[in-house]
Image (cartoon, rainbow, N blue to C red; front, top):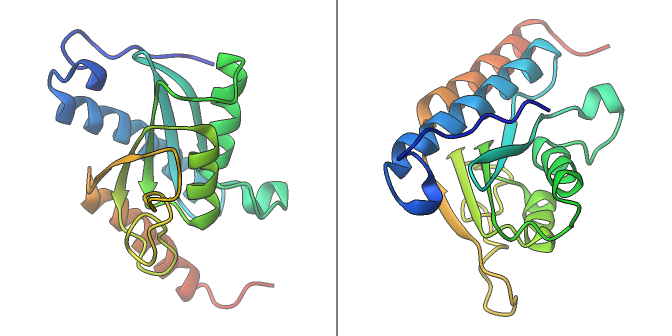
Length: 173
C-alpha cells in the first residue's frame, strides 16, 4: 500500500497545524468515499494513520463482498492491524467521512484506537453521540477522543447525492 507521509509541521500527533492535517487526511477518506459511490456502495471512506503514515484505507464494500460487516472502518482497521502486526492500534488516528455505527464503534474500542476524526453526523445510526454514544461510557477501560465535523459539507454532500440518485433510479432489482 502506498503510505503518504504528512508534511513537516502537519502531524496531528505533535499538535502543529492539526486542523490542516485533519483536512488532508479527511480528503483522502473522501476520495475513498467517492470510490464507493462509483461502485454503487454507500459512499463512506476511512483512513488510518500511525506515526504520520497511512496504514489503512478503505471504503464501504458491503455489496461487492456481500458482507454486512464490510464497512469502511472495519476494512481499514483490518489493514492497519496487518500493517502493524498487532490488533492494538493504540498509536493510530481513524479518519472517516461518516460517524461510525454501533458495530464500527465496537471495533474501534476493541482495536484501542484512541482518536477518531469524522466528517458528518449520522442521525440514523451514529454511535458516537448522534443516536447513542457507545465510545465513552464510564464502564469501558478505553477512551476515545472524537473530533467531529472535519469537512462536514463535502462528506454530507456525497451521501445526499448518492441517495438522491438511488431514489431517482427506482427500486433495486
